[in-house]
Amino acid sequence: MKGQIQAIEAERVKLKHAVITRVTFIAFSLAPVMGGVFMLILRNPEALAKSGALNQKAQFMGFSADWNAYLMILKQAMGVGGILIFGFVASWIFGREYSDGTAKDLLALPTSRTRILNAKFMIYGAWCFALAVSNLAAGFLIGTLLQLPPAETDAVTAFLSDYFLTTLLTVLLGTPIAFFALWGKGYLAPLGFVALALVFAQVVAATGYGNYFPWSVPGLFSGAGGEYKAQLNEWSYAALILTSLAGYLATVAYWRYADQTK
Image (cartoon, rainbow, N blue to C red; front, side, top):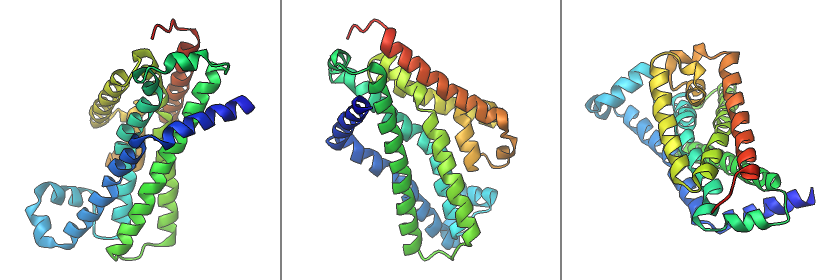
């Protein structure tokens, strides 16, 4: 147990002094900011009429300038944008050792390789949930400044439940990215995988089979796919969990048994 705590502390120190940490928080904060801009446009009928794409989106989703619509935007941003940002986080945590040339030093430590990976996964999860909480706080601050109409307590409670469940589903999909970071020995392979996963998530969801594609599930659960959310079932979540478990086991197996040449 002591070795695991030391491994976690080592990863925390790396994260503490990394500029990329602040970059991810700034990048992810664009979601509540853009949501606030959307609310301002919805308040101005003339501006909304001039913006064809936003007008169609508002009509399709039944959006209005209130808390319910704003919270829906935050949740959808997590389900779709979270795949990209969390994928970037996983790519950095697991790929930086090769890019910095420190992977061989980790492998030489008198610490279990599995403990090192578990520490990285824990830091990854904590980082992602910190991003989620940060976005939530920024969203509530912006919504308060915009003086949006008060939301019902039940609606806020339901939103918080769905928001953090969406976050959890998105976080779970980080394990395959960790494998590609180790296998590709850097950032390129995992980031390429994230890009492909995002593209396929949109394409497969558009065909109506997104409930069977793990990377489409968080977006559908968040409501980004509209009526397609109703297609989610126990097999949808089972596929996502099995994908996450397979990614974790593959990452551990590769780190322990592969021929590390770099």
